[in-house]
Image (cartoon, rainbow, N blue to C red; front, side):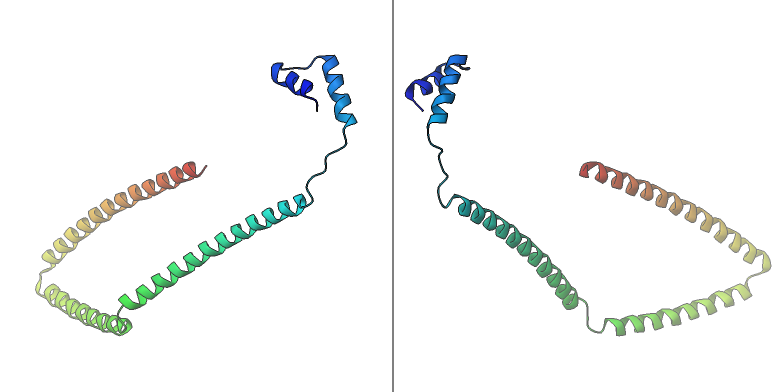
Length: 159
């Protein structure tokens, strides 16, 4: 391109019809420019490198997840006692034995109590049981509402 046309581009926003025709004529008269010989191979190599980096990053993060999971599993194995199942069975047997002893004590006490005392105790226990169940039922409903609100809030944040 001539210096005259370059100057016109810098000074004015638009070319006049004559200037535009002159520019077209000069561009058509000049030979076409070819890209450098290695241009295509450089572009393809850059694309391959970016893809490889992306795959390497994915592999790295997957490896980190696997390592973290393995470390957590090992930590659990180390912190939980080896005779855990044995301790659990012993505790269950103790609880069963204590439960049987408690049942025997309750039956002995019931035999000693008169009929009116037994009815009164059952009525008090029934009322207490109903009230406790009511309170915990309400608590459960409130917690469920909170969880629903949290789920809805999290879904809105994700959008």
